[in-house]
Image (cartoon, rainbow, N blue to C red; front, side, top):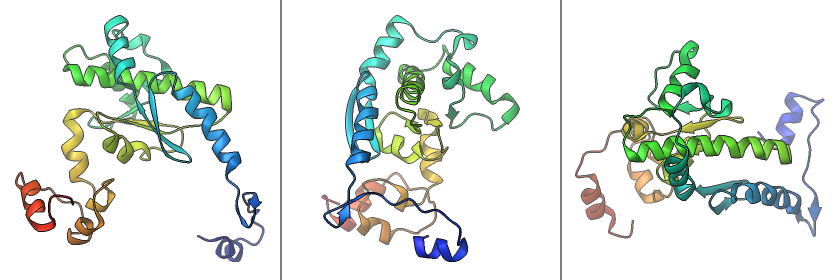
Length: 216
């Protein structure tokens, strides 16, 4: 909703406008604030700025180090903010959520990749608390094995929450979303596909290559 529309609906609304410099929005204040957050995140991994208020953080090395030196091994010892994580695929019973999350983060039978994911979830929770304490900014986050999946779920539980995508939940997640939600999928493909969620057959990559060419 635009500002003038909001004022018609709510005449008493107080709209905050960004500073203006040389006739354009001056975003330096936001860039400076974003730099503070990135400086904290970069203490644990490589950062890639995606936008003025979004960043990708590669926690592979930090997660491997935690898994080697201090892996989560006790549900009771899980950092509180990490225990609030939203884990895709876990039972939806709200009364048992924290218990289920703590158990998932300490699962000894998980494969190596998902054990790294549990460490990543704990590290991200710690970083989000640091950001709040040092800058007073809240952060939402998605934790997954690649940045496309992390981006897809980062906004699922706003504000100030994090969502984790185990390997076993990837197929159900993608099947539940319309193709246009997929980051970096070419517009030519999203226009061709149905707007509703759909499951793609195994031959889909070859089919798409034949339809749209290798570059798309």
